[in-house]
Image 1 (tube, rainbow, N blue to C red):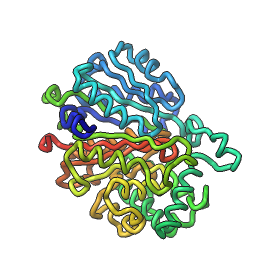
Image 2: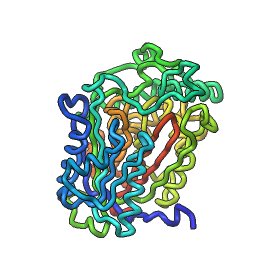
Image 3: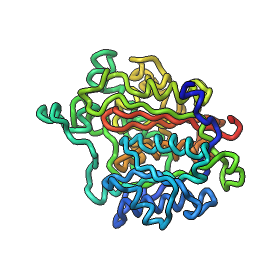
Image 4: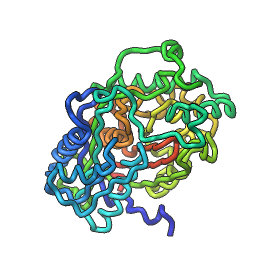
Length: 386
């Protein structure tokens, strides 16, 4: 049987979601921030830490973060998952949690993350190290890998710097509607295009923020979630794909593993791109948004640049993308993937305030890890979609 037919469609759900310490959270460790987000998400769900028997964690600098988090919480969970695939880790965690919950191995899963990279170091913290094949060429990683993908997309499809700037402009438009967003000031296409080059063709405005921040979600079986405090958000489908680790080994610089994970997740959910009301993408760099929109099927391959330049993903456009402002304008604390899930949940629960997408009943979250190396896609719905 296929992955799509075996996925427990709608049998598990998010019942709690929260963020904590977005922007700057001076004096708190990554562990403390992740714990506080976890407590807030549990409170949102009407549960306590004593209810958690499945713990899913990937801290930025603690390879045994799952153990440290269990110790901090004072619990002895039946299942601890410390899997690390970069920024896609948490969407992979959600898939693993869904399978464990559906099998009856656990009853309540907590997925949490925190990072104090802005106040602790003031720069992007990455686990990526240059390979012996790439390091001698002096590329700055990870931005250098994404710059290669952007340059190739420009060469093959005529994508322009202006197209990429429209991604950042749309993100800022959404961020201005989000009181949690770190960058909310007005900007223009001309201002974005005038920022200094970091790794050609990518400039500062093409790169994600460097912030602190934490997020968490709580999952349980849908039949157990009927008494939840908030509207239940079922997980309809999920899938992941790994295509490489180093950018030099990427099979095609213009095609990511989202072309595999996306169709599988949507098939498991029984939906198509046309059914999805909002899309939350891991936009560490502007080229990500272009590539993922293409690979997930929201526009044809090679048309992503023109699609975003048309205004389609900005407020008022045909396809709301990164409605919280994304990693480009809302927050980016080292690994952003869990924040795509929180925003999807908030949209489906109707809690997004001025940025709320009207009439939404299906939302997609997509995470990216490494240098376009690991991709994971989740499809969430309202109770009416199960």
